[in-house]
Amino acid sequence: MIAGYPLKAHNTFSFDVRAQFACRIEREEQLLAAVRDPRVAGLPRLVLGGGSNVVLTGDFAGLVLLVALRGRRIVREDADAWYVEAAGGEPWHEFVAWTLEQGLPGLENLALIPGTVGAAPIQNIGAYGLEMCERFASLRAIELASGEALELDADACRFGYRDSFFKREGRERFVITSVTFRLPKAWQPRAGYADLARELAARGCAANAGQTDDATGAAAPAAPTAQAIFDAVVAVRRAKLPDPLELGNAGSFFKNPVIDAAQFDALKHREPELVSYPQADGRVKLAAGWLIDRCGWKGRALGAAAVHDRQALVLVNRGGASGAQVLALARAIQQDVREKFGVELEAEPVCL
Ligand code: EPU
Image (cartoon, rainbow, N blue to C red; front, side, top):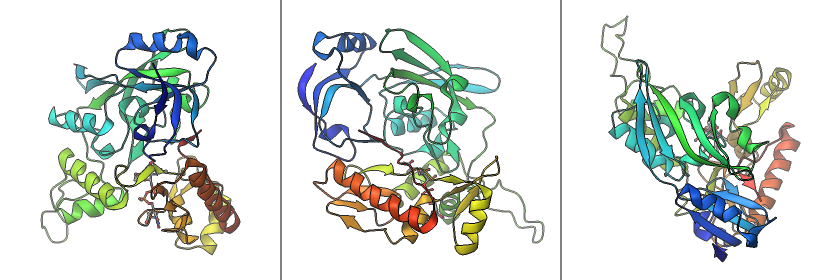
């Protein structure tokens, strides 16, 4: 356990703050030893993986657990699927790349997402037409208060859009030590997301499988392989999203808001270009990036905290910004979007 531990390298915004105590967890046994240390009795706790979904607004007066549990393996297969397991501290992107090297497709749409495997279920990471929960089998977690190890299935995790049990009742109560994924053998490319389909087309792949054009008889371009989707997702992300090592950020700063059909109809009438995705329950999800962009925020800054110039949903630290400055910028954006569109934007990262 280290006192006064610098967290700059442990949060992707690169905020220069410290933890009162921090402990690097490489083996499960270290977890309980750390939380039962008398020096941290009664103090708040923070579990950090890659620190890619957190806004640290100041020093943390408590214990930070730096999850560095490693390991990954193919657990088993049945007639329909392969099951692969990775430890909570495995870097997510390296794990996805490894599954493809093993010849196991299914996670390719989630390439290049920063952070760790253990953090993935907490906000149910998603991108380019796939959410993690669609490939999730179970996870193993240690409850810090009791030291008990639990196995949770998808129902118990209560996944939603960028949401799970671990963001609500389970918040800061558990450490996810490993996650098992189910990768169906009947793999189908998931290539319909607009940006991804465009990138694949530019690479000579079709979003829909190699059918023949009825009118001309010409063969359509080949369906993409999982590797082609992986490569295309990496290219799209690199083009739009800043690399946290170069420009501090936590990915999307806001969730895409979901509104009811009546509010959507009224808004769409006023703003015909509005980007939207109908939901199964009749409600409509809006592209928050579009709303923020439309308010004129793209590329604008408040001090060193700025709105990324290629994706308005991403707030960045141009160098030396504090968490408080980023939150001030976020509040100004929320207020503007509320006044212009009557829509509430909810922050996506955990703000401390
Ligand atoms: N748009 C604009 N201006 C902008 C940004 C977006 O007009 O500045 C428009 C785009 O043209 C597009 C639409 O808004 O029509 C959606 O944009 P995009 O495809 O970039 O995706 P997003 O909805 O802004 C979500 C996720 C991302 C994920 C992408 C791709 C959330 C909160 N964000 O962003 O996830 O990579 O879709 O699937 O759901 C993250 O969670 O950190 C993250 C990066």
